[in-house]
Length: 233
Ligand SMILES: [Zn+2]
Image 1: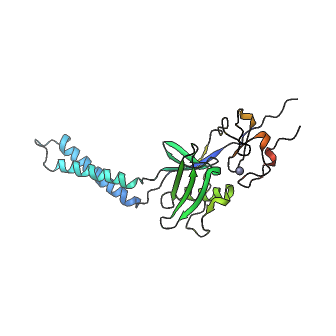
Image 2: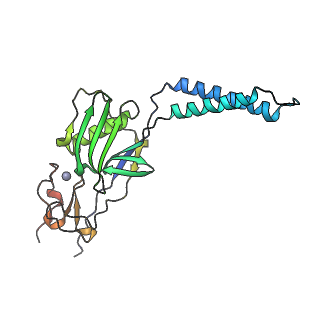
Image 3: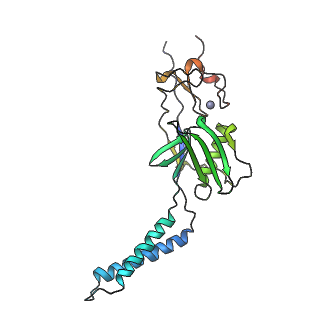
């Protein structure tokens, strides 16, 4: 009789781009003035029919370029792209570092800076702190707290009245994730090394990995694991 192959749950996460906290109309206005000066300067310098370029045009060019550059710098906040989902909270600067839920030590609220702070260890077991400022990353902050309360509630130290918006379920934020790499990981219960992918059982809440023969009744995150335990033959 063919044995039903155990399948890992599909994984998803949300990706959030930072919002500028600067006034967007003002940024656009300064950018536009800068661009116009650049255009006028370029016209005067290179395209005008006047026998000699005006003495003003180099200044228009330089000033325009400076203003334009300032608008770009001011309009794009320095905050990184953040990711929240099955794999934990992540910071995306081209390469992605995530703090898996099971490696999250604390999710707290920085009231002075109005930011949600995630502390823990990343997938390479390095210490990592991820900050989601409500001003630039309101939905990342909201989703980190929402998911952490559902998945690893014992780590959450965010007051109920913290100034965080409600999490909005926008499907355009959602991205599929690769399956969790389980081969070579150690079972969280027995420390036994996982040599074959079918031997791994993954807690769908915190993504702790167990060997199929050592799945406890309850995960350390509090999730019931009965459905992952081998039926004794
Ligand atoms: Zn768990």
